[in-house]
Image (cartoon, rainbow, N blue to C red):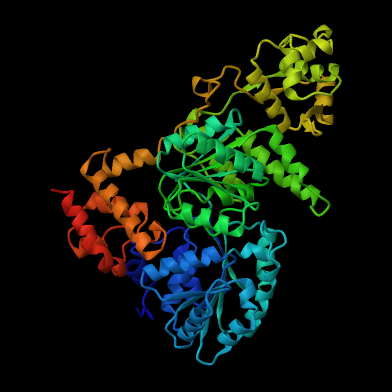
Length: 618
């Protein structure tokens, strides 16, 4: 396949089967083709790979892609090979004979794209290959470029060596790609990669297909299972703080009959690799993981991401929710938070951490959780982007769907709670203090004679659940904090000042809980633009002709993927299957009109597709 001199649009359609570019893809591609060094900041799932793959096919020479993970390289090369594009990766996982064959293919000019790790790029074998007189290095792409900055969330020292390549290949164009980069990280990328007067392009960080929802963590297993049940048969990721949490939730889900596996650093490398492959190949529905999981996962049909624990920064949160809905179809991001999460995050701060910076990042996350404006607007504002939700917006986030929680005068409950903390000696956790407020006759309360203090039984206007919510809210607003091994409630200096001055306290708090948040199994607002609604609208309800075509295509896709030893989505994504079921093509030109079907895949799979369409269209 020779596309030298072709237009980006021609390559986009004939190879990848797409009719139009997304976000800033076209601007980035044109900039690279013009030979200008470029730093592109695009959201996770925003289509970064096309920004170097299309120029690579048009360039008369080699494109070197520096990628941090072997799994990411394998996924990208597998996808390109399935499209009929000759791409290879060179790393320690490749058998020596295959490694030599790939290098010779590059020397002969048969391979347009080679993926290497930053460590591999520094090796003598790769350097000699790039300097071979038969090889013309036209482009060097640095994926996950934030790794070059110590202020980035995944700093990799080996990335610092890439600048030497820039000096050695002055005629090549350099493209740095990242999903999140503050102004400081952007400066570091430009400096540490030695980019030459680069164009900096910011794509929108808005992922409109992801419904954002935040809720206090209460009976988290039920909250998680409620979401999974709404996405029956669909893929999802659950992020947890610790290996212990991961293993416990995985065990609980499996005991309740759900298809789930765990992923964390406590597993062997082989176990992690097997679990990841099972998730990618749709052999398991749910991956429960620590933050170690996700980079390099291009699985497009992840329908939900649940954070069981508060992330330590907005950057981390955004990176992880971006693993949902990469195919552009409706998906969800649910965040469960509790005051205990804040304590856990602070506990892992050590002498090597910039405490002030870590606290600022954490504060950004807690502000997001406690905010009462559109969550999408708040998220985009953090990245310097303005978003104006439509009046009476629906399908955007839980706040827009349910309406903001009204500001309520919480002065009296505030005074009661803080007074009770003081009168019990600031020695107890939230549950015990609330028991005293509610007039509990528990053995511990009676033994401590806290039934005789003035705050005993004065808090019956709210339930224990509401008091716990109120405690979490006050911690988010820095009026309270939890300390020590037993999460003892303590009043901050600001909270104590407000109590002494008897200040009026107005906070976003729902005194009367809506039915959908009733205890036992807390339900989330159901996204109006849900995946199930999308399916019903685009190919009918279960049992319809289109639905049967999709089911049969999925079955065939899975069998074909096993034969080819690749993930099913590398054959066709779900969106392509839905489009085939909707349009029911019977000719090659009609098939090429379906989303995501290029010439190579149309020629390769048309016979089977036409057979399935004809069998279920009679």
